[in-house]
Amino acid sequence: MAHLRPDLPALAGVTTPALVVDHTALTDNIARMAAIAAEHHIALRPHAKTHKCVEIARMQVNAGAVGVACATIREAEALAQDGITGLLITSPLVGGDKPARLARLSRHTRMVAVVDHLAQLDTLCAALAPGDPPLGILVDVDIGQGRTGVATLQDGHALARIAAGNPRIAFHGLQGYAGHVQHIVDPAARRTAARTAGETLRTLVALLEADGVPCPIVSGSGTGAHAYDMGGPYTELQVGSYVFMDADYGRLRRDDGSALPFTPALFVLTTVVSANHDRQITVDAGTKALAVNGPPPTRFIGLTPGATYAFGGDEHGIITLPDGVPRPALGTRILIEATHCDPTVNLHAEFHAVHSDGATTTMAIVGRYDNISGGDAVR
Image (cartoon, rainbow, N blue to C red; front, top):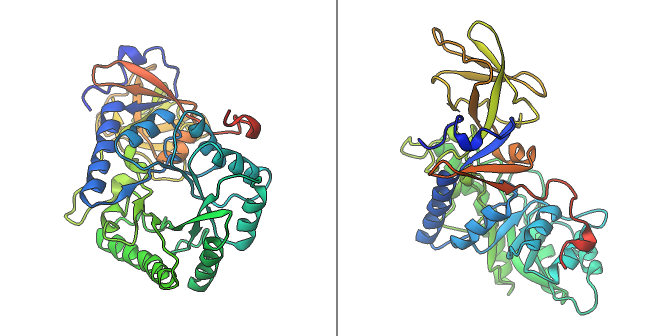
């Protein structure tokens, strides 16, 4: 990370606050997760909600991913428009024109959606036009988070059988995302929680296969639990945050006490705008630049180790310096590690990617708003 500095000439014209990516770390993280998955003979369908970026999705696919997962129809439309295929929308599509947009999208690219209720399945089928290809479907299963997904094995069994018997549907299997597991700091507790969550899916797969309903795809897991989910029941991993890492994932440890095997790659470039108090500076990166649903960042580039960050409002952050450390001058630039990477990305319109030679390129962040109309998503 020696090449990443806030005073790089290539960043001099960038107005702060701005999102900066260490492109070397990003590339290494993508390659490392691809190698881990290949070693364990499991597929990757990384979650694009982390980066919302066509270039990064393409890097993941080129590294061997079978496609990418999307949280919203907006993300899927934006990625499909630039040729990304193998898209899985991981949240049920309910309301407005979302089912119709999914139907249009599935005519042009390989798509899979999830359902956790028969009414959703019926609505998606009703949106299909005569002659449309069967719509790929996974049944979403609640494996402990209590957010979306069928609540019981009986409900999942019934819904999957109905989907598998519907000629308008291509039933591919199950999704189960254990979001409540990913950020458990203690590795032993995280391993136990991951195993418990996976057993629900394993049981449902067995019930369905006993009835002659195969589940070729079982999709789930995440960055925090990926090491514990390699032995099944998952056939593919929806890992996301590994590409960037953040202050929250930085707290996690593996069984041997070491950090997760990925390098922090996402930072917010910010400027010192006030320095009138002892041991304190104010920067122009507050809640509009860094997500608030994560621990405060502790990693800075351009500051003496030991500094701490606190939100100072919409536009400001307050950094407290260790004793004896002189305050940086007004106008000094600092790189702050991302708090929670996914929502931090959603606050910005582009990445400034810093390469190993100090040069920068920009990469657009897409699907943040409804900036692609349903009628024009794919031409």
